[in-house]
Image 1: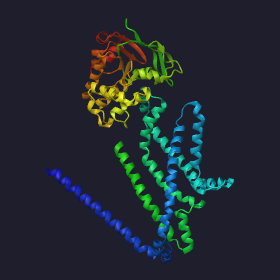
Image 2: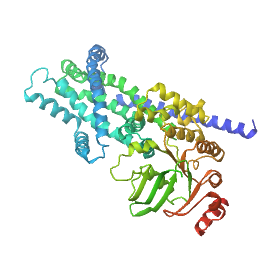
Image 3: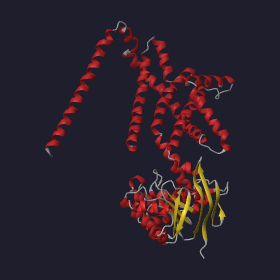
Image 4: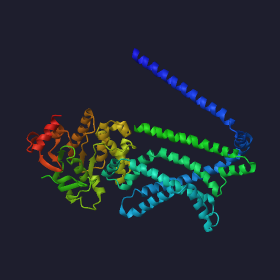
Length: 273
Length: 246
């Protein structure tokens, strides 16, 4: 090692240590300030007892976890429907022949409507509206129509994501497929789609996280999932701590999923550059 | 007399208001090797893409084995199988191994079973010195290897004519030769070929006929020894001297 490169290594090491030190000290200061200052607020005691009651948290947590299983179930059965519908709509919007124009138009109208209406409104309109037609059991179940509302909304978003993936595959790939005598359909299925779907995995992971949270919106039309269960506890105990418990449970799932999505995205950036 | 494989008559093609091909006439015999030379933008690529029916032509006829394949509404798929096209930028499918790149089209188009398809593809890989690269993905291959796989991919469709669109232009100088060797090998096997190229030395060595394209027209057409040694058109002289003096 030459003198110059040894000096470079030593300098880099010093800079790194310095950076780490500053980050540690500033983080510590911010936390200390929060811990010292928040309890000084005039309403802190009340807030602490009604939002952060340890005994209530412990006693309601198991039933909240149990109710969360329903959220997971709704999430899991909506997922395949969203994937299939989203893919079909994305493909319909890629149809270029005039005979397929109605399909393309339908795809555009569909995505415009369901991306344009707040999810909660779609949940209300479909979740209350369709059972209101006087359907008999089991077809008046809020599970069915609430899930459908989520499926319709999320497949509109997912279809746009998939379509952006399809468009990101370079035209020369289609040319190569066609020049070999492959049909348009085979070119899409074997050449364009596999590349497109791989590229949009991180974006779709973010949709999964959003869907996981929005399942809680179904609490407004009936199913006793975690948010509604927390509401029940809140009313019985006159305490908001169960909501904090519910938030913690959501975070247990969404934080790892978000971290994973970010990791995939960062990995993709590295691979492309 | 050799049979005419491909006959182009008065090909016109514009992109919007910009004419790219302005009346191309060219006849290619079975087993003939035609080289297209000319500066970038002279219409070489567009001509090759038109023959492969990737670009619809505005006027003229493309007779392939005597059939006009350029009539509007003609189903391009069966013809494209018989006319192989290799691109400057390889255009391999990045999500498939070299072997999958090669077997995809035969599998889907001919519906051949795997047990006949894979040995056939393996034989092609072996023939062009790629036997140990079949399981590699495109990004694990050098540019020269990728381009050879792209040629094998086109050959797997058993085409009757092969079109090459500046297939060495994107390669490092030291990788060009391995691709040219593949072309020589094909030439010896009697394949009918049209090659757009800037490799004047190679064209001199292997071509039967050389066409000089300029602004969408073939301005000079002759066997290589005549065209390269005694070009008649000033534009050809100018182009050759600029290429050879690089």
